[in-house]
Amino acid sequence: MITHISIKNFALIDDISIPIRDNFTVITGETGSGKSILLGALGLVLGERADLEAIKDQTKKCVIEVNFQIQNYKLQSIFKKLDFDYEDETIIRREILPSGKSRAFVNDSPVKLQGLKKLGQHLIDIHSQHQTLAIGKKEVQYKCVDHFAKHQDKLADFQSNFSEFNHLKKLLQDLIDKQKASNQAHDYNLFLLKELDEAELSKGVQEQLEEEQQALSNVELLKEQLSKAIQLSENDEIGTLDQLKETYNSLYLLNDIKPIYQELSERLKSIQLELEDIVIELNRQIDQVEDNPNLLEATNAKLNTIYQLQKKHQVDNVDELLEINRRLADQILQKDQLKDEIEETEKQLLEYRKMLRKKAEDLFEGRKKAIPQLENALQQILSKIGMPSATFQLELNKLDTLSSFGIDELIWKFSANKGSQPKPVEKVASGGELSRITLAIKRILAKNSKLPSIIFDEIDSGVSGDVGSKIGEVLKEMGEQMQVISISHLPQLAALAKNHFKVYKTEGKDNTSTKIKSLNKHERVEEIVSMLGANLETFSAVEHAKSLLNR
Image: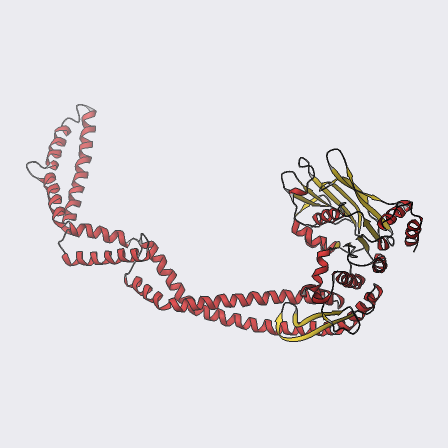
């Protein structure tokens, strides 16, 4: 349960620090005094998104800190699952910096908001006026019935399986769509693959063919220039080789005279040997030069095929064509693989459907058994809080199709008046009636709940003082089992609380601030009188307030 709340620099609040006790606590104050600000601050501690506008002084950070005493609630496993440090006296702190950044801490260790939200679900149930309207939503209705039937784990297990079932359905549809696209493209892909295979492509083939093309296209030029090079090297009169030999012989005769002549003659010998090798290679090359128009035509044809394929597939080289060839082969092979995958997925879906139907039947039977008891419990509490003629029916119809809730349709029907035919609650219940129905449900579920605290935001909205008093009695009963905090505008309800806080505004020279204080006995009388619309000078109002407080 909450033991302490500290709020600094949030909305209209400068700095407040209040201890919260167990049992039933009420918070009152004039409209606009800032009661809802407290809920906003608690929402941040429970992981709601922060807004920079919430900072009162934009030059300072906003800090909200709440202490929880949780040693009696067996939450160690939740902390372990979330990887949070557990303490019997757990402190959650939320900070909003002037930069707009937000930070959250559990027992001084930084945590992510997602984890904080999950922890918050095990600490506080904040019931706002908006949630009162949610009672008409199927998700809320099923949650209430399954909570009463103690089916929460079964439902969570079913919904997890149902989510996997839907994932498989989507996967199957994706596979079918792929197969359809594959079938449509299959013949064309076969044609493209055949075309690429017939081109007999390999790594480096384009460069090799282009080299051959150059050689075959320049036969005369090659023969002419190679012959000229050989002639210049070997000609008896002007051949370079003969001249090198003569030069070498001349220097060789001088070897013994001076070392430099020996060095020069050796260098000439090396040049001579290198030139002889070059001439040999030139002769080999000229022997390979042949005039072959047929080979040139075939080479040109192969290159044209490659160029056309590159243009067709919008690529620049043979390596990319080889990659396309591989992909096409994979796609054609995938056609058969898709068929196998579809058959396997259909088999899994059939097994999932059987399993889900069995679990849904189990949920249906459990709900069917629990509903009469829940209806009876609701009737009793509604009668207690000023609706003695109300009729509540929970209609459960079995369906053929599966949904995330099982295999049934749950309809909450309500009638406030004797003799009236019950109709769907969301269509016929007024705001005040919805508030009381919600309270009745919360009261029933609180008996089985392990939740430390519950907070009601004007659960008495739209009801009379007499009904408010009866609502207060229910809240008081709930306070014996858990910590109950109620924001209220009815004196009849507020007087029943064990602890009473008042929210009020103060106006300074430059700003307005929201304050909160714990009321003593005398201050409570004064606040109840004020809520009755009177003042302390009115004797009857004071006596009335005292009588309300002494119940």
